Structures are given as structure tokens and as C-alpha cells.
Length: 399
Ligand SMILES: Cc1ncc(COP(=O)(O)O)c(C=O)c1O
Image (cartoon, rainbow, N blue to C red):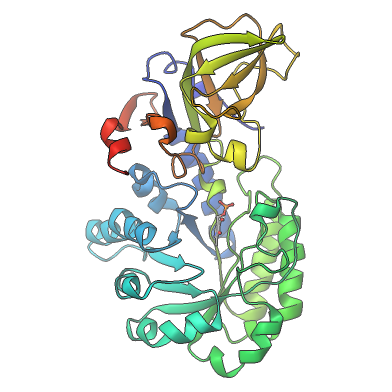
């Protein structure tokens, strides 16, 4: 899986539980790889904040990436306040520009004034959205784009497939043809997002469909945003194929390509440390109840679904002692997965889940009044500090 737990070994017994720990060294390793792709090809890479918004690390991210992208006003504000605005202030305006992009399937009229002040790029999901907000966006100097839907599914997770029939995400060729070319005036970019945790071959397939359907319009665009879902920092990712595709596309159409990965930025850079609270056994199934919850602290485990990697464990039956790990909530299905260990688990034992930076802290919740995990930063020297702590107020304040 490409997860290294080395950095966590010395701290896993010291930190409060539950907590997310994000390693600066592992994050920077990913960032360096992403930067090498943009250096080699001239493309621009943005952090999709929906996957990872731990803004403590935005200064580090800003050293390597070209900016951030948002799903709406709040993420856009976060990117602006914690990265773009700070970079401008820090550098006295001389550094490379930090870009702040936004895409939403439907904007709210009450928010667009502010959005267009703090974002330099905005992507619209339909011609109707575009014509509604065109004037205000252009007046504010925003570079505008339209999300297209090439209707090319390359993956099996229906819930993450924006190309499924009837999808609300992006303009299909049929709808596009109705408005082009007149309504394209003022648009500088096209955007597609079709992938989820995929390799470069899926991007090649998708790009073929994009060119076949929308290629004629690409010549008049300044940029093409290829969305996220590119698992560039995964060990087996084919960076060469990606780079070749980026170079070819930019050259052929004379535009700048943007990638906006979320997962790839913080892939395998985070951990969730928990401890065993209780062990119960029924019908021969031993369950360790831990102080973290799939439903509350790692919702993708249930949504995707997937079995998160766990340090020092095996598949069910692989090692001597097998346990289900489950959350302390009322939800019968709050099951994290079944794992085996070299020895019997004891109350108080600490367990470390891997790959817990992405889509975990941005999606967590306080169902059952569950405390939210602390957020901890682990620096390159192995020192850790708590960046955020959440108490009762975090629960009460949402209700
Ligand atoms: C429009 C858009 N861009 C970027 C992303 C980031 O994708 P990932 O985290 O899979 O790289 C998403 C994820 O849903 C998205 O919807």
C-alpha cells in the first residue's frame, strides 16, 4: 500500500486519542513529486481542499503547488485567508501568484459577490449558471470556465462517477451544442472531473473522449482543468504517461492544463491513533471497541466502502488473534474492519490506522456526541504538536 509507519512509532503511545496525525515529511514527499510534474510539463497543480483542508500546512503546500481550489465560499475563503492572501503579504507581491479557483454545481446569489472578489478562476456547471453570473464574474476580473461532461466512465464506484447517465455534473455534448458557439464568449476555460483514485491510463481514455467531443472548442480556450482523482503520488502511478499527455495537450491546443488533486496531495501522509476501550465476544466473533468511529471519524470507510490499513496487523485469520474493530456509537454497522494481530488485544492498546489525512477530518462529525479527534502535526524532526483540539463545544456549537 506504500504506507510507512516509521515516523509514527515513537509518538503513537504519547499522543492523546483519538487523534489524526499528519506527517510533514510524508506530505512534503508528495508535494515534491507533484511539483516535479508541474516543473517538467508546465502544467499547474492546485490542492482540492475538499480532500484536505488542514490549513496549518498551507504554507508548506504553497511552496510546491500553484494554489487551491474550492467547492464553494467557505473553502474559497479558507484558501484565500490561509494561503493566497498570506503569500501575497509575505512576499510583498513578488512571489509567483497563488491561484484560488472555485467550482460549484450551483452558486448562491448571496455569495457570488464575495466569491468573485477572492477567487481568480470560477467554473460553472451549466450554461444557465454561466449566463446568470457571467457579467458579475467578468466585471470582477475572474477567469471563467465551464464544466463539461465527456460521459466516459472509467471506474466502478457509482457514487464517485460524475459521468454516470443523468449526472448533474458538467455539460454533456448534447447540451453544449445547443449553446455553442455564441454562449462561449467570455469563457476562457473548460473543466472536467471524471476520475477517482485512478492511474494515468484512465486519464488517457477520458482525454480521448474529451477531444472527440469537445476538441474543436479547446483551441479557443486559455486553460483546461482536468479535475482530480489522479493518484499521482501512489507508488504504481505512471507519471511518464501523465507528463506526456499534459505536454501534448498543452502544445496541441496552446493552453495551460490544471490538475486539482485532493487525495494525491496528502495520500498516506496521515494517521489516526486510537485505543481499545473494551472487548466483547459473540458467536465466536471478538470485537474490540475503540475510541474512534467509522461513522464519525472516517466516514469513507462506510461510504466507499473500504477497509483502512492498520499498522502491525494482518487480514482476518492471518495472524494469531482476529478481531473486528468497531466504534463506540449506537450504529450496529459502525464497523471499521476485521484485522488480526500477533497477540490478544488488551484494553488500552493503541492502534494506528494509515492514510487518514484525506477525506477524514473534512468529513468527520459528532454523531452520538462523539468527540472529534485532535489534529496533530508531526514535524520532520519527529516532534509533534497539537494543532486543534475539540471539546464539548464543538458538539454543542453545531446544534
Ligand atoms: C471537481 C473536483 N475536483 C477535484 C476533486 C478532488 O479529487 P481527488 O481528491 O479524488 O483527487 C474532486 C473530488 O470529488 C472534485 O469533485
